[in-house]
Image (tube, rainbow, N blue to C red; front, top):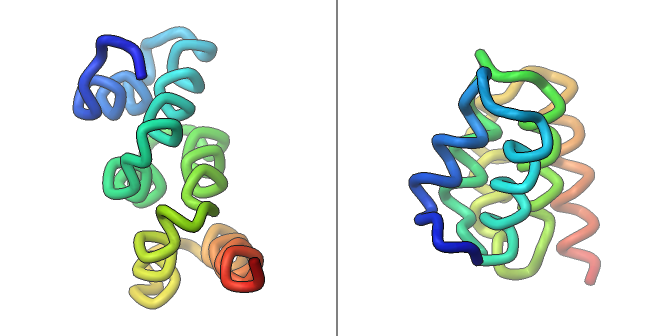
Length: 96
């Protein structure tokens, strides 16, 4: 991970005024560091662009983050399309 803290990466990913590449990079850094709770927080944040929420959701599809992904699915806090994607990703992780 870079010298940014998980909180700084989350803030950057959620910053609508930040450069697109930097925001996507911050999400990748969170994935690399297995910061599952932070990634789940990004997925739950509705005011940000859908592509960042989806990128964070896809980053949760790892054995290390399966419990955070499972919580998102079980809590049913996402709108229908993201909920469906989360369920499919969880099936993929469970099948590994």
